[in-house]
Length: 226
Image 1: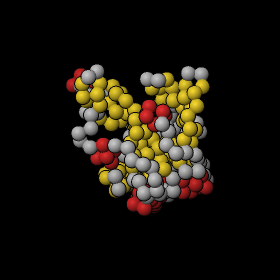
Image 2: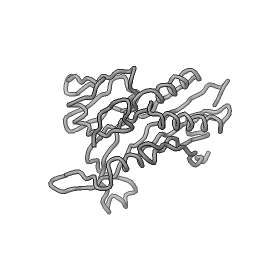
Image 3: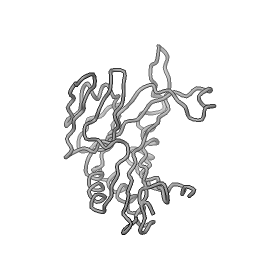
Image 4: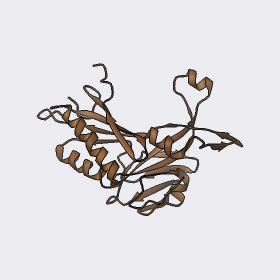
């Protein structure tokens, strides 16, 4: 399932413990007081991973903004756009089980494991589609703040395949994937309010929902009730 992370790769999926125990180029791991701190090369990577507790203790990705990145000025947005289209993007997803009982609870699921998903933002197809999605979002609003949800669930499922299973207590389980996204939130000031550029009060968009490992498309999400 794992692929070498070179300039030509599109997407990679690595189990969290494997990632931490054998970090890829540009990442180092230090053990500190019961947790592991992951440092990364900010010149080549964008990491959107919150602190996570795994079976081996807490894992902290140093200098990561977490799953939600907030920008407040046009300059910050422009810089983030440049990073997303020139670096490798890393997010953490959950492989979960869902029983009939859990289905009745409307979404409560059990996490079976955690996986790091790497997406090559500099890949020509991904870069083009990312730029196109951001441009479409910006052109649909004027003087507003808003949020954009960047989701990889469909591509992730396609990448690991329908036959992918996790061994739990001697039983093979086909997981469902959760937390397959990161959020860009633009909080504009009153002078240039692009209504909640990347925010919930006025507009919300679902962007860069990847349908194939080499195909990212963008479409607006339903506008929330206000």
